[in-house]
Length: 72
Image 1 (cartoon, one colour):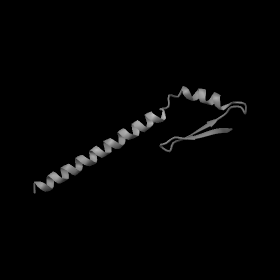
Image 2: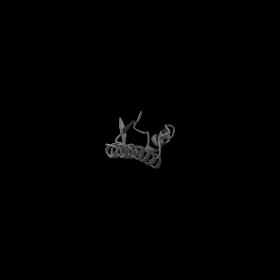
Image 3: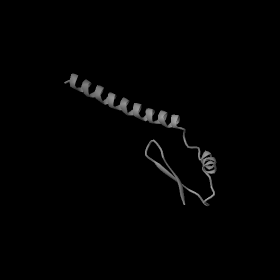
Image 4: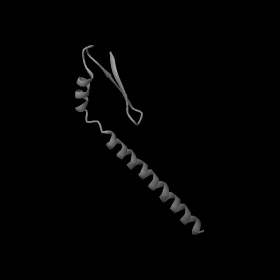
C-alpha cells in the first residue's frame, strides 16, 4: 500500500510503501535516516556548484571567442 510520496527539488519522486496498515510515518522517517539522503541545504549547495561551473565554462568560451575575433 502506498503511504507517502515525496518529490525532491530536482524532480525525483520517492514513494514509500508500508508493509502493514499500522506502520506510521515516524517509523518510515526512522528508516529514511539510514539512507543518508542529502539535506536540502546540501542539495542546494551542490546545485549551486553545478550552475557556477556551467557559468565558468560559458564565460571562458566567450572570452576565447572575443580573443579570436581580436586576433583576426
